Image: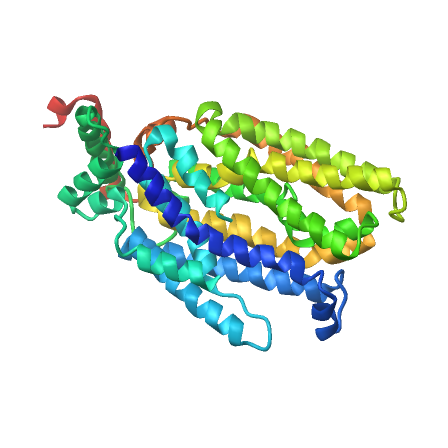
Length: 452
């Protein structure tokens, strides 16, 4: 029952990611519509199109930061429900509006859902659980999520952190108990409580605490970098502007939209296969390294093919160009797609997980995405095939060395064991009285009798 409950909770919560994915996916077809371009008196490679997509991503920056502010105070479940309600209102406004609008709700839930999933997940299947968020990337789904979250459990870690210990234990048993692992459940509960108590001794209100504790600062850096590196794969640029890329390959009209539709199906299928059978076996670091190298190779091939087919008249090269764009989404779905959200949510300690995830998502992901959304239409128009090599250079010179030297493997570890992986619980100093508390905690871990 525990594993079934885990997957059921995570799947339903992943509707929050579907809300964002749906809104983002629609723009691919919208900017290819001549009626849309005529209405706004623009072209598909104009700065106006970039501004429309940039505004959507810019809204995600504020949505993510907004979610991080309220998640700790009101809990994961209520905050996701609130984001869904905002999504419903945003959908109504968009349907009634004469001009373009973007809602904060879906973008906020894009951050909130992985945090909730990671805190509810059993460590052995956390990759699958959080990967469901990527799998699900409308107004009706938002309403379903808002209503459904009323009956879904709060994160057990949030309950324990707010001293609702009996409720926390009850939810842990509901999510992880398989009829034979009572001792493991009790050990997990004790580990969660011990870690949260230790972190509380070294925390303070506000956002600056994330930057003042050295261990947390390092973990925030990793959470943010994995989001930045995700955007520098070029996946969102392809997602938004693939119809422009197909047009450069000589594919136009209905065929252009058909190819875009097939592209949008290929990624989710690859993602589902990866999170179901591989992510919790192969881990996080190796797929990220593999994805970086493989995506770079695919983009090199894409740029090279385009350089030899600038007028789109060589049918064989055009087909190859489409194939390599498809390769990028498949490779992304087996690496950065699910792992970026999984790694971000699990690498951060509980006391800064909400705000840290908000920062990593808002700044590392959506602020960078806003930049690429704005400049890409003009870059594709002016640079053409050379544009792909900007992503190749970043991937090979920046992303790959950082992944190899600085990222740690987190596969199969509980969130509390990941704390120890980075050097202990709640390391760092703020002021004298917190320093004393910190030393007492460390001494207690080493020799409880001595402290007593």
